[in-house]
Length: 217
Image (cartoon, rainbow, N blue to C red):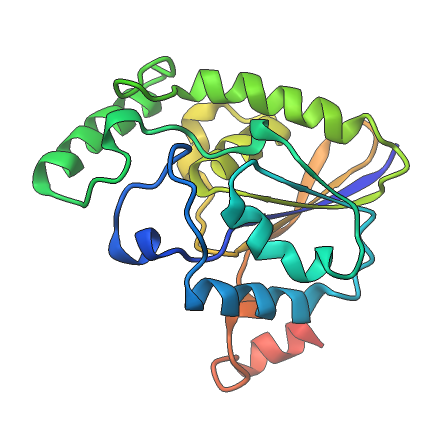
């Protein structure tokens, strides 16, 4: 079975813009910038011919790919694609104390302590369990050869580790921004990243360098 996955993070929300912790427990809408990003992504990839769209249970993912859904493409919500829950810190603005708390948790994760989590939140190992369940659903449909997945930043980093057989401790090796693209191909035995952290669709023609223009064709 061959399959191509286009995995994107959702567009910008006001909480993203304000630097407020979002997570699984905040079901926020896209802001004006996020809606623009959704239109830019659609304009760049509307001719791909996706067989199916998978989104998280949070509305910002559906809003990010709504132009594709409006074409009549089938879609499915999978809670396993939701963002990692940050527990008691969701909805909090950045502060020196919060940054220190996050730095401590991140250090634990990099050190391999992947069961560490904030109160009321989720650990990377817990997210991995539900992501594997979501991927079981996605991979159970061999007829869906080209799939669009819209999810969330931290969750996307974890999923990319899972798909490429890398330890979750390497999650921060997958940079991202709002509505950035990772494209992966599956040859029946393994996934390969063929487009890494692609944000060309978010640039205006004036922002694209001559090299970028050549890449775009």
